[in-house]
Amino acid sequence: MSYKKPIFKEKYGNYINGQFVDPVGGDYFENTSPIDNSLIAMYARSQQADVDLAVKAANNAKEAWGNTSVTERSRLLLKVADIIDAHTEAFACIETCDNGKPIRETLNADVPLSADHWRYFASIIRAEEGSVSELDANTISMNIKEPLGVVAQIIPWNFPLLMLSWKLPPALAAGNCVILKPAEQTPASAMFLMEKIGELFPPGVINVINGFGPEAGKPLASSSGVDKVAFTGETTTGQLIMQYASKNLHPVTMELGGKSPNIFFNSVMDHDDAFLDKAIEGAVLFAFNQGEVCTCPSRLLVQEDIYDKFMERIVARTRAIVQDDPYKPTTMLGAQASKDQFEKILSYIKIGKEEGAKVLTGGQAEKLTGNLANGFYVQPTILEGHNKMRVFQEEIFGPVLCVTKFKDEAEALAIANDTLYGLGAGVWTRDAHQLYQIPRAIKAGRVWVNCYHAYPAHAPFGGYKKSGFGRENHLMMMNHYRQNKNMLISYDKNKLGFF
Amino acid sequence: MGFTQVDITEKATKVVQSIRAKHGDLIFHQSGGCCDGSTPMLFEKDEFYIDDSDVLLGEVAGVPFYMNRDQYAYWKHTFLTVDITEGRGASFSLEIPLGVRFMIHSRLMRAEELAQIHQP
Image (cartoon, rainbow over all chains, first blue to last red):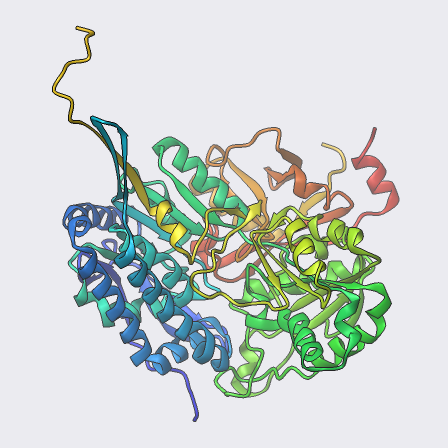
């Protein structure tokens, strides 16, 4: 099977009120592929006026959609999942082209996982109930979950289709209308999806606004016409969104990244078996998605008595990573998403070296041949240092692993928790006690135990500390998109006796 | 202002000036976190709420440069230079529509520089 750059239209507008429309101001921006810096297409450069149209459309549609039966909402979400599955290869090629990640990952991870999240939320709403309590012989308390109304969702560029599929299904399943702003680096798969599913939904239920953060994202996040904002991205933008929410007094949820520790205890090397092989892969997963993952296992903590032997295997496995044309099915590591990301990663490698980190492998940009020479590739890199270095504390968002050693459980935990963030962590051990007690002591919302980089539906995902708040991928997330209506009903014929 | 630990390149200065002409007074805030994090963000002065949790590192091209206090604890030994590169960010930073992105080059400060910054 061979894959190549898809054919795109010349330009894509917005999707508002059930139609594809040009931006009001008529401006478009160029979207390029980081594989070879070639043009993909022009996309709408929306402004306040476009956001206003979407807000109006969503508000007009919200009552009818909120009253649509659960059966019908579920049916539509399931159809979306089937459509995504039916177009797996097309979506995979678009995603590889727009983001730069290898086709191996888009075919086997991004696209199937995306479809599954639509199915999960389609399913849970069929089995939900509210609650009723008899408070006394005459008084009933009844709880009904109602949708919020209109939800604004701003997603990042690292998993465009998957991030869309984490955000839209729960909001729609709960009965809300949505206005989505895809990241300007990666608008392609959202527009392709709307071409395929737009007609399924009543106009105004799903709206997609393309454009730049300061011009379209900000008006959307600060709009008084939406009832909630959900955001995945970086900390400063998260703070801004919370500021806007404070004026509008509406709820927000956000996921803001992390600096996840991946901890390997000495029992891992007790046997040279399949599990050790898995553990080595687990450490090398820093390279998955070019390191552009909020939960990139970017800090490797290795128990000192196995350090040398373990690192020998890690370095070897890292050097075996195939970095090549992302359209080739054998490629494991593709392009970084944009030039500025590429520059940022290189500047972190530089400060890492200056702070005294030792480069165990990699450490520079990778020049590929042919038209790929114009793309943005960084060698998978391992830096050896200590946890107070800036490369150990800040999200590099590239295929850069920072490794340090620890003596015992106490030190492992101290290093693991010495971070401003708390999104993910990995714990690898054969010891039955450590399996529970170590994860339990790590201040992170997701602790992978003897695995990593798994994001199944029905496992809630979200951060502690500066990684944000709110959880995704689980039915508990429905509460983020709803409000509780308590009906307090009296069957007492008699008055209170006050007046 | 005396020696401060943040500077800016000429190319980046030009971008700041063109944005100031359009938007008025500005501030820089260094973001942490994923995606477009680990880079400086440029906003209109009153856009972003600044308080005790933010540290002022200095001024570049007439724009105050802030960082969250907790983050600064790990940066206080480094000298920062604000630069500009081609790219496509996705935050609310004002240079994004221009198809460029601010970034930071860092180096370790020398002993005498550290002494000037972190006087008791």
